[in-house]
Length: 420
Image (cartoon, rainbow, N blue to C red; front, side, top):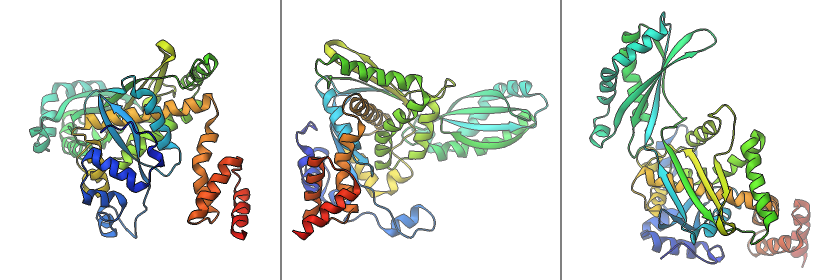
């Protein structure tokens, strides 16, 4: 069974879940977890964070039409924003028959930073760190035998002299292969353990010992060939490319352009129990790595009016540790994806980010972003106005037909149908 599914959005939530469960092999218990009938409780929440009083559910949807590295998948996305899942699904449909998304991954390498101050001779101290590299790496790898047994661990280091406002300091980067974990805890443990040794080698004082969320040794890439949504309309194709080029040149546009990418990326990261803040910080820092903030995606015109899209961003995501294991919905979402490695997960997330961005540019180049977004937002507005049960459908139908998206108009129409 594939995920190229016509009219998927017209199905009821139960029918959609039945299709996803059949495709992904979800059990009855896992379906109940997805529906929110079991699996997560205040007691579970209380074990995850401090001062718990409850928990806040976020809608969990699935994007259809995705083919990633030759495999059809339904992509779980946790988001409160209308139009995100529909947009990703529509963009994936335009890439499906041309091969879907092809991905690559640079490897699960995280960077740990050790910051050394109060150095009389910083460049000599840098040389001493390199001279003692093996001892430093050995000390790191003594901290996590399990990671070493899985083929990971500290692989190398790099040292920089950084001029701050008051002094020249050393910043040592430890490159750690964290395998299928995001790796923050493993890296930070190594940083802490090696700090006394580094102080002894350099004669300085270690201040910071923490990983960097600019995970530029953990890069995910995705590529797709999209069928033109504009047919033979050369003007629309020009508008699409022009919108992309503005994002590449102007940081004010790039910020919104990349936010659209993260609409998709963060939704999958959240659904799988990974760290949305770490991923977003890394992505935006990577977009500014050349000293000017720019886009994470690129587009070129292909043959037969196709559009070739690519994306490149750091993705520090994993399948073990944290909420990926402790949150029952996250565990089920990961099973839904059918991924076995962090490399596969990163590739899917990059593909969703590319699809999300393509859909946004398509809308901006044609009807504008608000028309489609407000159609999907109409249900939320109807509920905010107080509509219940069958009233919601009537209000949405009227809003879309009349193009009346103002809240006061919706309230008046709701009062009218109640009077009837």
